[in-house]
Amino acid sequence: MRIAIDAMGGDHAPKEIVRGAIKAVDQFDHLKITLIGDEEKIQKYLSNHPSIEVIHTDEVISSNDEPVKAVRKKKNASMVLMANYVKEGHADACISAGNTGALMSTGLFVIGRIKGIDRPALSPTLPTVNGDGFLLLDVGANVDSKPQHLQQYGVMGSIYMEKVRNIQRPRVGLLNVGTENGKGNDLTKKAYELLEQSPINFIGNVEARDLLDGAADVVVTDGFSGNVALKTVEGTALTLFSMLKDTFMSNTKTKIAAMLAKKDLRGLKDKLDYSEYGGAGLFGLRAPVIKAHGSSNQQAIYSAIQQAVNIVETNVVDKIAMEIKELEEKKEEA
View 1 (cartoon, rainbow, N blue to C red):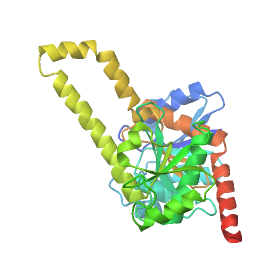
View 2 (cartoon, rainbow, N blue to C red):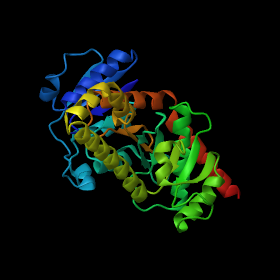
View 3 (cartoon, helix red, strand yellow):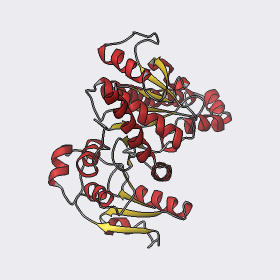
View 4 (cartoon, helix red, strand yellow):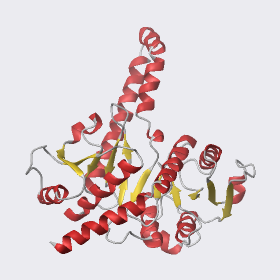
């Protein structure tokens, strides 16, 4: 198996990208990695590893670039070459911690959608209090969605959680303003009906306040609401840890308490650490595409690679294509 990685994407590229790649190939015997980017900068952290090759380019899509224009104009950008490497069959999956919008555009224009998928979904796994985590989709690939898009998200998310996270009959919930049937706007009401008819374990509506309690294994929503929910969770976690730190450092007594609780606090932080869950999958494309967090360290990159390996090994893309095809056939029959 070979995975292509945009070595120049992210806040800590290429250092943390290379270190994460080295950790991954040392862990998985069958894995080969292609790093795409500035070879001189990459080689500072790479010691001619036999399982890692480098494709040189000095062109990069930055966080300030307009996504669609950058993908069309910067043909030799590390992210675009990465996607082409997958399209041409040289790699089974690809990963980037770079510009999210550009990666979504690259996935659509270069790799392309699975037949029957109207729009791909950006799908991160977020933490829960029991440590299992839940998949949230979409979180921004599509700001405006239709009911059938949310139905497809439910099917794709269910397949991923079953095949990759080994959850039997994953619970699929629809993010809404109330748990009762009939709640919400026109989009959620129609999406509810379609999800009920889908070959998944749909449990109905879930509220945002219950997400981290593990109300569902897969939570479906439109990209606008999903992005707001994602940023709210991230911001709240950062704020709480900042408040805890300020409280524990306020005086001698609390500093002693912090020392005594240090191990437990670190465990809590690890439970909420995104780097343990991998990246956000762009589900609905013809090959696995993983968006790693922009501030990814080597552990986050390693987790994203592990995630990509699992998706390839369990044939998630083929399973999604098969389920969507059957769903479309049933609609035609009806």
